[in-house]
Length: 195
Image (cartoon, rainbow, N blue to C red; front, side, top):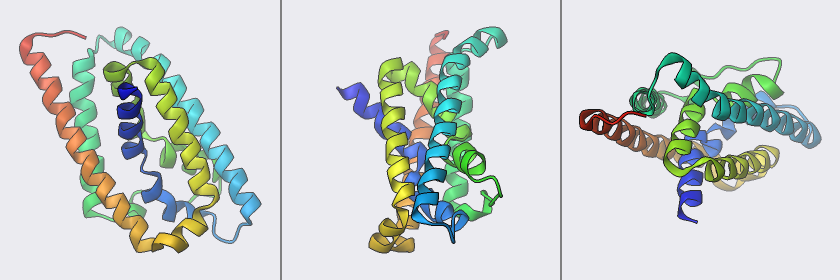
C-alpha cells in the first residue's frame, strides 16, 4: 500500500491541481457549470492519453537513445527544479496563457499534464512500479476533474489567495523532490549503476 500512497503524493505535488485552479477558472470565465464540466472531461481525457502513452513509450525511447534511468533522473530533477523555482518566484500566469481551444490545449496539455508531470510519471514507474503509478495517475486525474468542475465553490471556500498559497507550498515540495532526484541519480552514477 505504501508504494501507491507515495506515488500518489509525488504525482499530486507535480500536477498541482489546486495551484492551477485559478488559471483554469480564468480560462473558462463566463461559461456555465455544464460547459466547465465538459472542458474538464476533455482536459482529463487528453492528459490521460498523453500520460499513459508516455509511460509506455518512454522506456522504449530510453532504449533507442541509450539513456539510463539515472540520466533521466538527474535531467528530470533539474527540469522539475526549474519549474518549482519559476513557480516560487513568478506568478503562474506568466507561464501559462489562455487559448481558444481550451479542453485539450492548453488545459489538458500542458496545464494538467506537462513536462514536469511526464517526468514525474517515468520516475514514479522506476521507483514505485507500473501499477502504483497508473493507479496514482488515475486518482489524480479524478481529483483534477472534480476540482476543475466545482472550482468556483472551492475558490469561494479557500479564496484565490489560499489557492495560490497552496500552489506555492506544492512548488516548495516539488523543489525538494527535484533535489532528491538529482542527488539519487548522481549517487547511482558514482556507484557505477546502469539503468
